[in-house]
Image 1 (cartoon, rainbow, N blue to C red):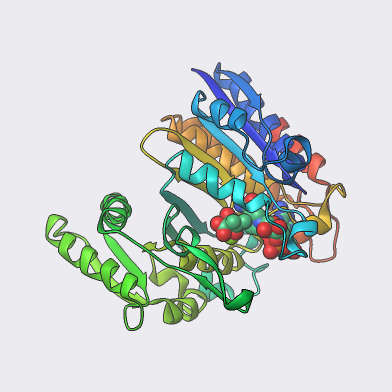
Image 2 (cartoon, rainbow, N blue to C red):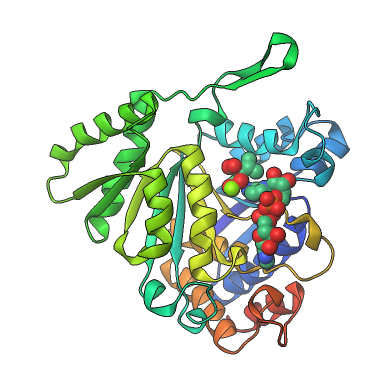
Length: 351
Ligand SMILES: NC(=O)c1ccc[n+]([C@@H]2O[C@H](COP(=O)([O-])OP(=O)(O)OC[C@H]3O[C@@H](n4cnc5c(N)ncnc54)[C@H](O)[C@@H]3O)[C@@H](O)[C@H]2O)c1
Ligand SMILES: CC(C)[C@H](C(=O)O)[C@@H](O)C(=O)O
Ligand SMILES: [Mg+2]
């Protein structure tokens, strides 16, 4: 297969982890006879520095004309520590998601056999965990009207959802549930929020179209607790943008590290693949960041093209590295660790 992939490395550890995902993907292409063409493009703080905006038109054109996008991470402390900055790297990420129509963010949480005793949660709690969040990605409080009034002393962020936005995300959730254990959990705050009541009523109305799917409705605060208490009681979870952002970082603890969890953002045309973590600025240039979340995002990318064997080969290489202790310091428990690049080299060599 010939594939053009837009490559948005971004900031902080973004370029380091992206390099490893490219290396592993190139090893896959060589082994399985594919032709990958990488199309690098600017985003985030790096794009602001270069051209004054975090998601330039040129980057958008490159994304649109590619078969998929592989994304590292964006964000820089100079913006995090300056709440008054008007142009921010994160705006680029949000603009990109909206412009590419990436409304469904698929965030799986799973465990790795060799890491079951590395999680801060007990083995018997996490063993067998294999759940998927479908996080709504282009609506809600992230995209509602925001601003200040009263001379700047009052701030507001509106949370807005339309029935159509809920329906298209929930449809993906029901469809995914049908391919798995037919269990769907709608996570909301319908006891308080009007937008959540719209979510609940919309999902309830869709139940009749999927009679085999058992739907549970749970409040987000309770899910935050049960997720770490009984993670393997969940399978497919659908939720709005902000709840999904928070719960998926929490869920990464189950696997053992933020540096392990991949994601796919789907729309009607193009899909984007990215780790769920950020630019981890403290690690920039130190060759210590875990590249596996980005490498596994590349596995999801191959699988999205129907290339299951290719995805499986990447997952097998990651599992082997974890089992043999070829890990970055986040998983080394103070013992022997390898650099970002060395883990990437090992993964590519073991494809
Ligand atoms: N999708 C994105 O690009 C994205 C996601 C989250 C945060 N951000 C941005 O990243 C910057 C830093 O945010 P943050 O510190 O809250 O989140 P972060 O995900 O960058 O880091 C949080 C913590 O997770 C761990 N971690 C993250 N990635 C890791 C990796 N690859 N290997 C090992 N450990 C890893 C580290 O302990 C780190 O301190 C901010 O500017 C934020 O806006 C971007
Ligand atoms: C950086 C930020 C805008 C982003 C989000 O909140 O969606 C990040 O936390 C993520 O999870 O991709
Ligand atoms: Mg996040």
